[in-house]
Image (cartoon, rainbow, N blue to C red; front, side, top):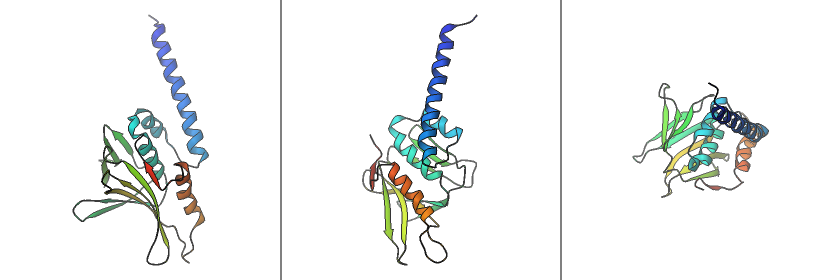
Length: 182
């Protein structure tokens, strides 16, 4: 038997999905970010309090030449290069970058991640480093996304690489400090 109510529910679901696809495609592709079908799905099912952090981390992971650093409280630092198509999801309060089936993965307690900072700082060799850093409420560094390969062989800053960092910075309001809680 045909049920009119279930048809209406499906129609609303498809309309909502189509509107979300349009919005995400327009916002991300206009800025040059690569978004997959999986990203749309995860965007739709995330807890709203993590939306901003999810979007920022997704934008970072969609770039090439990113080195993630995670600092432990015991004096060690783990570093991992981001590969194309790296899985990323947030389930409950836990974000997982990478996958259990990969050589490495990172878990972040998103209840602890409260702010991001866009950092440009001089290095000892006269060049500048570029990173986006994630902090907890006590100011402890939880994770850092380093933008690598910013200079050519002659030590000249690559404008294309700088444009990627700047595009993300502008997208999130051109503020050095970004509160990830709304």
